[in-house]
Amino acid sequence: MAEQKEKRSEVKRIVEHAVAQALQAQLPQLQTQLVSQITQQVLEAMPAPASAPVAPAGAPHVDSNSLVQAVSIIHAGSTQKEILRALLDAGSEYCSRIALFVVKAGAAMGWQSRGFGDDEAVKDFSLDLHAGPVAHTYQNRVPTPGNIAEMGRQFVEQFHSPANEQVLVLPLTLKEKVAALVYADGGEIGKLESSSLELLVMATSSWLEVTSLRKQAAKEEGVMASRMESAPPPVQTVSSFSDPFAAHTPKHVPARIPEPEPAAEVVEVASHASAAAAPAAAADPLAGLSPEDADTHRKAQRFARLLVDEIKLYNQAKVAEGRRHKDLYDRLKEDIDKSRGTFQKRYGSTAAASGDYFYHELLRSLAEDDVAIMGSNFRR
Image (cartoon, rainbow, N blue to C red):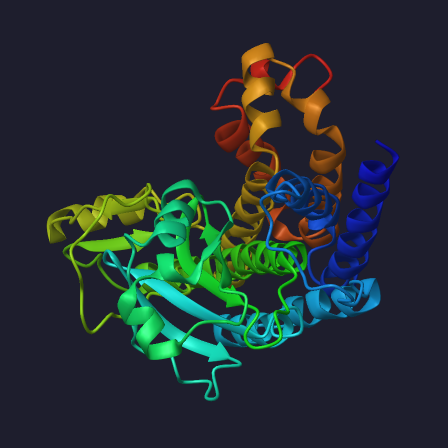
């Protein structure tokens, strides 16, 4: 029991320090949620000692400071490529060989690797999604240890076996979907620290979600601006979540196996006839404002939506319970008040203050347009 408490404390300290460094000047309201989420996931995902790959005798103890630095470097990335390369670089400190395979259209295609002699060694190699540990990781979204023989004959022939034949496959998930698979083994020296690798992959998943939210907010701003200047296009598809691997198309697609639920919620934007464009413009509540004030209102609406989306993303269980018991504000008071303060600081003294956008977004997105769900302690 004491050992478990000490392990929990150590992991939490590592994550808290790393997340604080990465988010200090960017998204401070997410710090508490990220620390709690990643720490809990690490502890739940840690394999039992009997089933985990065993490090050789005399293997060095995990350096907590190095792990903190590794997570910080991952969270310093601003693009998906930077973040994923940082993951591979950091992961190579905790195993001898590591590779990332992008999951797209029912295939897992090699992207980059470390420790295979060439960073491009796995590029476009098709990983067998039916292979033992790969299939288990893909279907259940959990790290899976295994034997190299279970990876399939083609994999073994091309990349050969690690000395102790032990491998680890980890899921890199985005919105509950496996977007990529991370392969790791001990190579010739048997170096494979599974718990550290799990933490790094989870930290990467969380940071990719944060950067995706930012890009989506910027995309929505551009889309709304263009719609104000021209008639709507015939039909377009807008994803509510940016996919870091959208540009990676597999060259060879093997037989498909059932995929988890998709990460993006797709919204179809219906076409409108030209005759309907004029009435729609007349109904625009911002039509009578100056271009500057109208732009401020639109930005305030988007910022309120982003703040509330972040609250939902990292408090899904609390949101569900709060709706059920109609005490949502009491359960999310700290997050709501902090985000309300952030919104007021930016738009409370602007032309958009009269729109009360943060309040309306809370009701629309969190309370499903029912103020009673927020509870008796909720104030406007």
